[in-house]
Image (tube, rainbow, N blue to C red; front, side, top):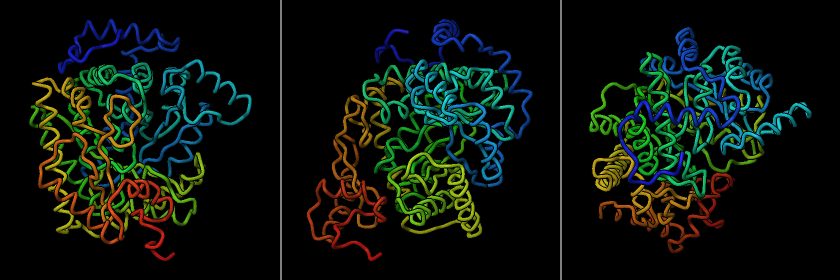
Length: 493
């Protein structure tokens, strides 16, 4: 399809004739698209046991107040990827398929070369599984060869063909969104284009829902994973959740990436659920199943395994205290490259142990958490109000205009459409605050609170508040700290 202008974006469900015409173009972009059969896909999902349906697993976890464990995993070849998932199955509740970088950029010819080289080498030479190249039959074989639900996890601005193939094959959850898989991942993809492409993906999920087949949709919560204030990631999650619901999605999982301060992380998870119900209801949606996902630390990890386990355990505790339905588990080998199966298993077991211990302690209630919940909600309401005002009744347009104006601004994102003016920094207790608001519209008293928190840290460290603090914070956890303090103030080892 030709590029789309912001004024051409609509909030309504894609017209059936428009979808069918576009679908013909999408399926023709790579030869495996011709094997997509929607009716066969419906039949496969209907015949699938409940134990392999992602929406059913999430619904049961919500009912039981359990936190499901999900690793990240993906290799180039079908047999090896199947073995990897089966090896991980005893240690997790739901399965991933992490997609390779070529497929994320729709470079299927290069992905095929990676498959061929991997076969010749006898090991994966891609950083994930290429589902488009393996096609419907290969993906069906994968789904049939495992015993738990599988989700597609990737990072793709245009995931239309991937969605058609994987959903037709029996994958029951699809991650991503037009904002979260564009702004943090790409430099020159127009936001209006990626939103429209993801409306197609969400409409496809809606078509499965129309046939009684539940497919889970999960916007990518952590964004850049680097000092992202909760209200920023929450705003994006809510916007993508609303765009999905508008296209007929009914099972939605909103996510958040660990920031490091326990009170702020717990508050973030609790406020995300409350805010979702508020805005989904405000837009008139009541027929949906909501769940949440917590991503363990997405930034740099300590190289030392023992120290890495501490980061994993802190994330597990925050996820459970925050009431997350699911947790994306990291490994003690994050700092050294692609984790082995053994490292994945170790991360899952460490997370399970912490979740079980925290689960026996009941609801964590503190005034600090309550204050953070109230602060995050005020910040989100302020930004959302401006997005809706810009859209004048059209959410999709409002999103594009909000990014153009810097109203929504994701820190350290590569996208040219992202203003990049807002700068975050940690306060003296490690919570993420605003150093420079850029053009983000926050109430004066909220901005004053951020300034006071940053000033408190500056006083404690005996230096003026500056961008050097931000740089220090980016590196802090990999250096076994939370707050990037000067070496003279570092805690003893």
